[in-house]
Length: 159
Image 1 (cartoon, helix red, strand yellow):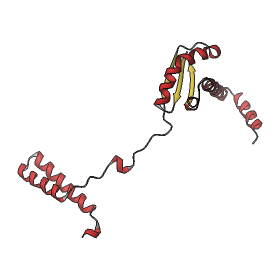
Image 2: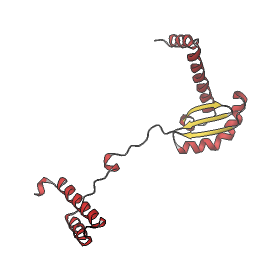
Image 3: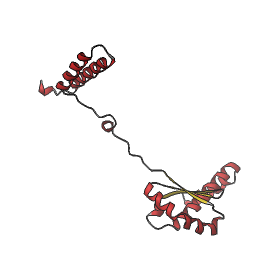
Image 4: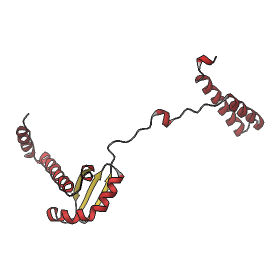
């Protein structure tokens, strides 16, 4: 589909009240973001992902705290520069929104800790010394869990 056809359809959609208001707001934000990015040096301009101006508050969103710090440092100059074309700007708020968050692997989230048979026997001996107290029962459960985990992770070639 040709770009002119897309633009024509967008204009027709813009004629509808609610959708037109939304499309106008999106266009204003796109133009504001372009104006902000034009005033920033590379590579910072590519890391400023979103800009909004509402009630005199300029909100900028970046993808990293490093770029956020740079934007905060440059905010007074940006405000002064943007006032000429966008009216009164009282403050600038910078938000960091990473584009992708690192997800820990299952092994990192819940590492498997293997207990040696000697450690399990030591825990059982300590549990017997404590008797039927809470500590004794807890030590026994821990030793038994270690023994069961050791059985599950035992290499079949070692038998």
